[in-house]
Length: 333
Image 1 (tube, one colour):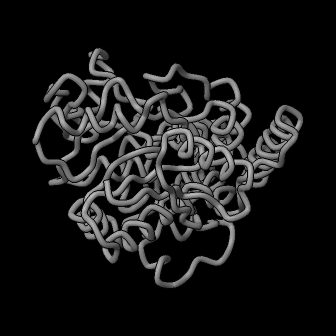
Image 2 (tube, rainbow, N blue to C red; image 1 turned 180 degrees about the vertical axis):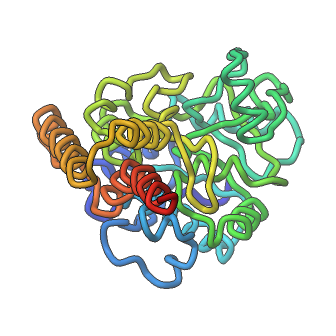
């Protein structure tokens, strides 16, 4: 391992202190990479990685996180060495991390482009039908195969809080994802074909629950946030319901459709057959979103991180079916 990087906002003093303590305890040197703030103007040389969806309605936290990984991969290509450790600011290393990682790497000479040192959603013992379907039909991956006592070819290994990546891996991801960023980076990474991915089990790095809890509600592109308060809980080896709801299940052009968008489309269809006016539908949607914001603020003492682009997207999903139906009826007359 030639160098270690932690992606963290320059203003995240608590998180930076947490990671620094983790690496000092592990006896490893660490360089911080300043994360990109998706709420602010994104540098043009980084913004070029976004697709139309990311530019128009991508959630700032999701976009900032994804672009930060791509920007770091670009830097890695100019660094001396071949193997790099990348983590996020909520990482929590296991005890004796350095020696355990060294042993893991020594178990087999099987080459990799990326090795997930920690993955919240990878567990070789999980052979559920839902996971199998998700792996085969969403990611088009084979099922998990064991390489050594702690290393596997994963069906999929979501979460990007800790991984080893080679220059070849960084090069492949940049080539595949440049101009295609609009969703969570861990999800996008699973979609890239040809990358030799492996995962460690048991994981050597996890996400710090308290730090992750503070940001996870506001880094998701799913609505409504108040429902996510109850849906976001999960054990460390399985998806939270809110993650299932926010992950794409289909796409129309460049526009991903997840369970939430399907729900809003269904609402639009119900309104359509209910014969409600456009003005009333707009009022209902605005009321529900404002109610969601109020409940979220009361529950978390924080302003939810949705923006006008997401608001327009949700309203469009609800209103569009009615508009199309009214136009069709008018054309038939």
